[in-house]
Amino acid sequence: MFSKERIIVGLEVGTSKVCAVVGEVLEDGNLMIIGVGQAPSQGVRKGEIVDMDAAVQTIHTAVAEAEDNAGVEIHSVYTSVTGGHIRSFNNRGSVAVTNDDREITAEEVRSVLLNAKAVNIPMDHVVIHAIRQHFYVDGHDGITNPVGMLGAKLEADVHVIHGVRTRLQNTIRCVKQVPLDIENIAVSGFASALAVLTTEHQQLGAVVIDMGGGTTDFLVYRESTIQHSGAIAVGGDHITNDIAVGLKIPINRADQLKLEHGSVLVPDGEELITFKREVGLPDRQVSKQQLCRVMNLRVEETLTLIKRELEKHEMLDYLGAGVFITGGCARLRGLETLAGNIFGLPVHIGHSQTVGGPTSAIESPEYSTAIGLVRYALSTQRDQHQPPKRWEQFGKKFQEMVQKVRTLI
Image 1 (cartoon, rainbow, N blue to C red):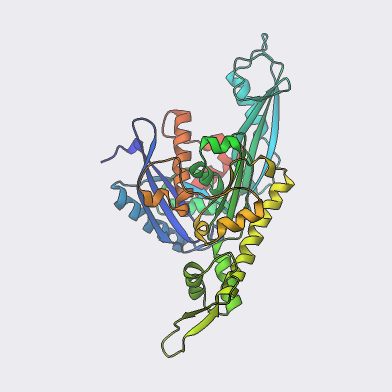
Image 2 (image 1 turned 30 degrees about the vertical axis):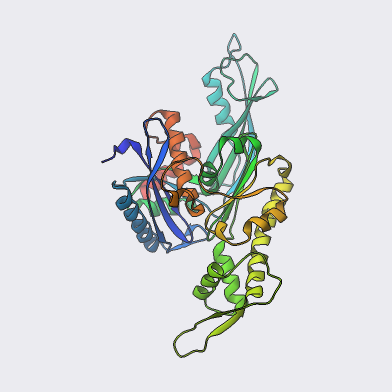
């Protein structure tokens, strides 16, 4: 039996699937995946809860499978959040160094980070992450640790990710009804990046695009710091729906065609795909070219939206490591080629490169978010040298949200 303190569980409540990944912290501090569990999602749409009871049952099923595979009992998890309401921006805070000797201490660092996190966001929003980027001492930039330096003014840049309070609470409340304790939450795109990118990738600059069933999350690293992130409420389910409408076939048949015959690259020749229908009805033929054209249009539109966002923030020229695509849609045929044509950069189909464990889990792009949650948990534990409860580090508003969530159950 594994020691409870050495076990970390990441839980992704996605539109297409609920996925639980169990990680063990080894003696050398590295992570080993020891069990996974998943179940087709019910009660989740575009990454958000729409039917609490159905979603609770699905989570329970996935967690039970992970428990059986790992041989552990799961009582608490780190869970992901996503949705079209997620927003982000960069912010700078500053404090005056008032010590007689002008030496910067840990207290000034805490103060400047709190100042940088004290941002104006909509009243119904709450800060999810405030991730440090760089410090400045009297205008000198690129400082990673200012403690011990001398200066009159300390500044800090942070990347702030925020979302609608109640929509985040719905996911939290749903997990708690399983019942499971929530150690912390993380935005899906942030978690996926932690799984997919190595330290070298982060330094060179990269964008991670997590294409799930209901949302597409993206996050940009530049010179080892997160510079931009976002979420689009479009995913694989929208491709399936487009196929169903365009070819006038049922949703389940459209999903089957997408997986078995589809590609985001449109073939030159004309080819017919034959599939059987219900008993008593004749076989049906559809054009493979038309199927692929429908898929191409939706995926090209989604990737082009992300490219325009990167151009708007002048990020494209700093992505030395290229584009990493993960999530369930990363398995679509031709995606690597199409994305390369759109971004004009090297494109990689991303899977976890930062943990050990079963090849089937690590090399599956659909597990990236849940594996990244385990990585995120380990990093917070290292920061505190104990099993973390880091709600307070998200700032006062996030503390208030958590307290309200705890009163909801």
